[in-house]
Image (tube, rainbow, N blue to C red; front, side):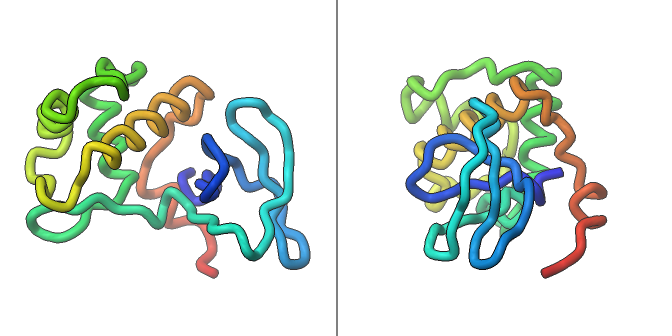
Length: 138
């Protein structure tokens, strides 16, 4: 499912891939439902391509989101993005105990919380790895 959810640099929120056009993508905002083009010069990344640093390497975002979902019992995160850096790191240590404390910044944890809450609130709560593998590679 995360293959079709996109983050676009410079635009707030997350977007769902609707269609592909010539030199652009048609995306729909998860928050407002408005459709808009994302051009080739926009920095667009699929959530399936994002990973978090751990002491042993990298962990795909899908697995991290599943861990957050398990910790929060499928509800929105119990911590807010306005929490202190120490509170964020303590909360994230419960989710991903072996995260690299030197390369995962509080801003990364805040973005994860924001994305997770947005996905849960919009009913996009399937973070399974199997769903990602079914999508054709580009």
